Amino acid sequence: MSGNILGRGAWAPGDPMTLRPLADLSPAEWLLRDDASPQLLAQLGPSGFASYVRVLHEDIGGTRDEGHLSDTLLAALCEHLARHTTSPDDCFFGLWEGYGQIHGGDAVGFLSRFSGPPVWPGRIFGREKPPPPEPPAFPAGVMAGPLLRLHDLDHFLFAGSIRDAGQWGAATYRSGAPRDINSPNLMWPADHAWFVTTNIDQHWTGVAGSEALIDDLLRDDRLEVVRQRYDEGALR
Image (tube, rainbow, N blue to C red; front, side, top):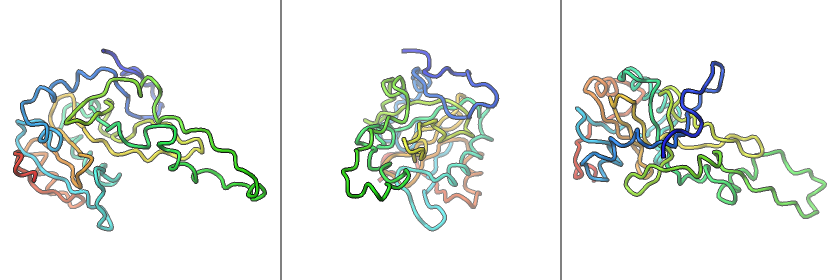
């Protein structure tokens, strides 16, 4: 299958800068051709980079999200990523398709039940009409499109600028409340200068790149970064 769903390059000045879902998975072929084990690919990315690190998910207040970079940490990381690629406006992003906020119906009904206006008190003694099911976060063509499989996990693939990482363009709930969709699980630029992976079960994000990129991350006081060997034993 080729082409994209929303039309790569079709955005006009003034349009919301959200990522574009793709129906063409060929930008990920280099990743899938790598000889590294599925575990290494899923947690650290492809082999052959000069250096690898973990960016810990510790934010202000000491909380650590599992499988998710907070907006603050994601923005700080992307500042460095943008400086260490020749194609900051031509990047690719994977989003695990299993997040409940993506799917409609009962899967997200409990997430939006109390997000709208309060029920009028006069109706408290009557039988409340059940709300309509929530629609999916993305159009039908996206939801039914091809998925990028990595280590038994399926991902939607998006394209866009690194500055728009995490801006999925998801539909709001019927109440108008926004969906709290995860940060990207996979990120890489068209020039393959670096690779970022946030595994759904980890409290850290793996970053692969040049020594210059890694040195910049290690010096950034906003980020807690530790070096990582590229072998399966070091992941245990």
